[in-house]
Amino acid sequence: MIDPSQIRWAILIAMLAMLMMAVFVITFVVLYQKRQLAQEKNLREIEKEYQLKLLETALDSEESERKRIAQDLHDDIGTMLSLTKLSLNQLTKIINKDEPQTEYTANKVQSLLEETILHVRRITRELVPTTLKQFGLPTAIDEFVQKLDSNHSTSIQFNCNFETIPRQSQKVELTLYRIMQELVNNALKHSSGDQIVVELQLEMGKIELQVTDNGKGFDAKAMKESKKAGLGLHSIDSRLSVVHGNVAYLTPATNGCRIKVQVPLEPEKQNKTEPLHPFRKTA
Amino acid sequence: MNEYIQFFIKNPVSSLAVFITIVPIVIIWFRRAFIDKAIRFLFIYLLIKLVIDTVMLQYVLNNLNNLIFYNIHIPIRYILLGGMLYYYFESVVYKRLIISTMAVFLVFSIWDILSVNPDLSDTYNHLLVRYSSTVESVLMIFWLLAFYFDAIQSLRITNLLTFPFFWICGGLLLFYSTYVFIAPLLHYVVKWENQFDIGILYQVPYVFEIISMVLIGLGITYYSPRQYDRS
Image (cartoon, each protein chain N blue to C red):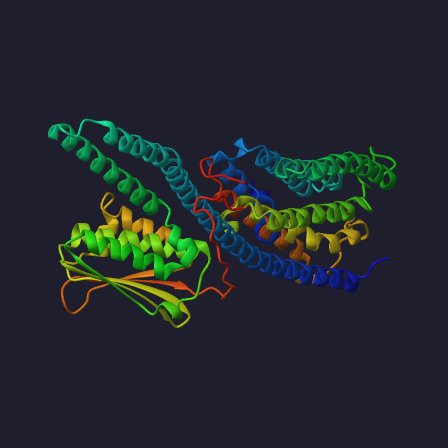
């Protein structure tokens, strides 16, 4: 037989159990939300990583395509042009040199052909900067700047202590090189200045690339928001995100603009001499 | 009617425990929540509970033994609430287990009723079941904890606090976690013409029932046919 005190105890235990379950439910809510936050964070990171991978693949594809076009130009068009030049030389020897008009035309064709060969070589080099792969970033930038300087009225200067810049992975060097190309071309096209200075230096564990011009300057934020005009700047951002770099658009005291790009320095690795064919396929 | 009013005045908590069931029923009806299969089972259970509780109240007012309804109510409650969880869970293993326990529990509770009351026609001396309510509580606590386990494992619920089933299962968990301690004594305590005087504590089980119904009602208010998304 059960007495009232036993029932009282049972009810008190039941009340305690209810309280415990209430605490359980509250704890569950807290735990659930914590786990949910952690999962969301995880998902965001995965998505970010995936986007980065996608971007990297797109940039790799772009470089492969450039390489392929350069190879076709070099192997097919280049060879054909060289053969044409040879044949033309032979033809020049056998034509009647007494007729000035014929000689004039032959020389003109020859000069046009030589110019075309030079153009093809230049385009090939621009598509695939072989100097970059063989001799590193400072040399490649120097070569690029010197070529531009000789072809343009704008003065282009490159400041760098070559020995201080260590070799980086192909990805980092190519990224900085393409960004430099984009920035210098932008300055030439839009700045309306007459002086461009490219600087490459080491700054607190980072490789710093600066492109300064004395032109009219521009509003980077407004430019990025503009769908058409900001493509180049967006491309710089995309390239930098792959190598965890950053870019700052500054306005110097004098007119113009200064663009500062920083990329974390990679641990130094042993230099490998690669005196190979520029279009050799790498593993 | 006068008898009802007097009973309400005399026993406000137990009367409220009976009629509070109307609240979730009305909310389910107006929010059209019965469209969802799982909530439809809950809706049917609440309707049956309201009918049984009202009939039991009527029997009390007429001074008749109403314990047979309570006994019948136990397997019906487990089957309908189990049905609700059956449609909630996506796991085939859970679904099969729920169906199996439903069948076994139905047989077990019928056996329990018959073993305690060999002569069903003797309604005057009808007694409460001995084990069924305890077994039901244990089973339901298991399934409700399984709901929480499943929720935290899958993390499919976008906002837990606006998810109807969180509140429904919370209400049921609070109810069964107390009921599991009281149920083993019911057979010995609740007997016709044999009331224990335990003072205010007598009202406690009714309070648990009221809290449970309020939480179920709260859960249903969050139901939205458009935004209802369990995944």
